Length: 117
Image (tube, rainbow, N blue to C red; front, side, top):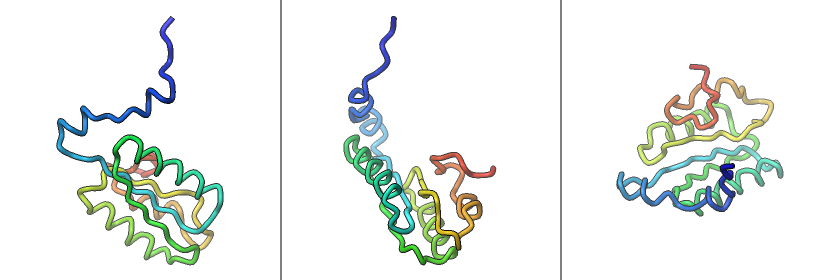
């Protein structure tokens, strides 16, 4: 029977892909507020990026950030050619429309697949 890869096997750096394309993959994580569970999850993602050679773009915004400022940050990440994937950590504060924010992520960079198409 074929064995499933061990977690340590999955974390070995994909050097061949990075070297052949002359591109370091970029992953942006946007987090709003200081929820402990969200902070822990995002910290894990950032560490995993560092382990495999992916450049992490960290956008940490205060709980009271306006929806328009959050969307402006998403637009900047969409336009940044060094960012290949964007994750907006949910849940967002109640004064922000999650669906609206998620629909602003470029479909090509939406790592969660939440874009409404």
